[in-house]
Amino acid sequence: MPALPAAVPLSWYLTLSAFLFVLGVAGFLFRRNIITVFMSIELMLNAVNLTFITFSYKLQQVDGHIFSFFVMVVAAAEAAVGLAIILTVFKNRQTLEIDELDSLKN
Amino acid sequence: MLPALALASFGCVVLLLEFLLGKARAAAARQWILGLSLTGLAVTAWTLWAQQQALDGRRLTAFSGAISVDGFALFFNWIFLVASLVTILISYRYLEIEGEEHAEYYGLILLAQCGMYFLATGTDLVTIFVGLELMALSFYILVGFLRGERRSNEAALKYFLLGVFSSALMAYGFSLLFGVAGSTRLKDIGTAIQAGDLHDPILLMGLAVTTVALLFKISAVPFHMWAPDAYEGAPTPVTAFLSVGSKAASFALLLRFFLEPLGALRDAWQPLLVAVAVLSMTAGNLAAITQTNLKRLIAYSSISHAGYMLLGLVAGNETGLQGIAVYVLVYTFTNLGALLVVAALRSKGAGRGTEEDLNDISGLAQRNPAYAALMVVFLLSLAGLPPTAGFIGKYYIFLSLIQTGHTVLAVIATLYVAVAIFYYFRIVKRMYMGEAAERASLISSSLGVRVALGITTAATIVIGLYPEPFLRFAEISLLR
Image (cartoon, rainbow over all chains, first blue to last red):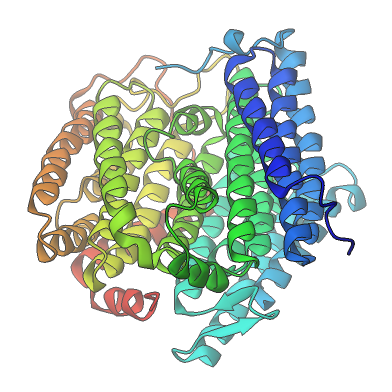
């Protein structure tokens, strides 16, 4: 495994991934379109992958690489299930706005 | 490992069966599917039993420490087995009524249980994450199984979005913990936490994010908002499976996490858990008072039950941990039973409502005294009154709180039992004093429903009257 280039310190990678993660969380909390919300979650998972790869490089260990493969597999499965659910919701309601889903309430 | 193999292979075969048998509409095909799923559970039970015998109080680790088969894991696996058995037994008739008889339903239940197996046994972050996702993905589909129904769609979507969000949080927490410990084994992470400096921002962040994700999964306040929607919209048997299986599995994970790698940081997380437990009891119990939908009411009450279970972890002594095990066991049978009665209210006929409203159960005692009486037993047990099983569960939790000097917490918890009695007895009052609704739903029971009711009622009463064997069973399952 090649070493990290010395010019870019480890903390930069971690900061970038933390930034991506926070961006994903913000998108999840504030966007109102279901597809955009789902994309925000994918962004969070990508931040997770970046963190794993960074630490894996730093520690010279493959465990993190393996975990990031599992995260990708899981993300793909989630996309399959999630898009199917979004599709049925759209078929029954003709809307993709989260705020219009209000048939379950107190 | 064998139980997981059995579950996964039977799950996959059942999943494919619909293609092999053609459309699973014919009664013969459906009975084959049901029979095969039950055989899968029987094989799983047999392998679990064999492991229990081989274990003899020891702890076996496999796959270089990725899973650990111990008394703790097996205890929870028996609970998962009961949950999926009861769910499958009551689903047959329910799916017939809804007109959604597909083999996938049973396959997904078996696969979800396979995920739960890895949640209870996993001692490696990769195993835990994959097990969690296997369980969660199966549940997203099961919750939305009634494709034509808007409420089921909506519940699936809300559960899916919040579930995936919490999984992403957990994965991020895992990645930071991996960075600190340099290993994905829980044991190494524990060593790193003990050796490490708690003010390391990466470690702190990793622990915080992972804890939030765990609280999401057990639906503790303030991360509970998905539970009422998912429970209400899902098909009732799935609600039963979700409220019991998923909660027990998440609790197994939470316990393994808090007792093994985080055991050394007890002082740091104890106040946090106290706050979460009190908030869960408060929000769960108070919100349940105003509910008119039975499934939503049970959802809020299950949030408060998560609070009680957390109190056992707050006390943290031998009695408390035993108390959690007993509580989970008791809650499994009781909650399954209560939702079973709700599922039995659903009957055939076009233009009917959902039959899960407080009005639908009104006057049930005149139409069907047996079901009303059983519902009373389950509600008594949920409230924690003797001589039912619920009392034993609450007794041990309260005892452990008093033993460790958390008297104020014990008093608060007892006061909330009074609140719980109030809203559970609102249901009892409607069943016995209420006027039967005009288009009163008739209970159409099947053999499966009766067997499932027999199992849950017997357990609720027997654990209440003669708890010794169950207490001993819970004691050998403690994580030490």
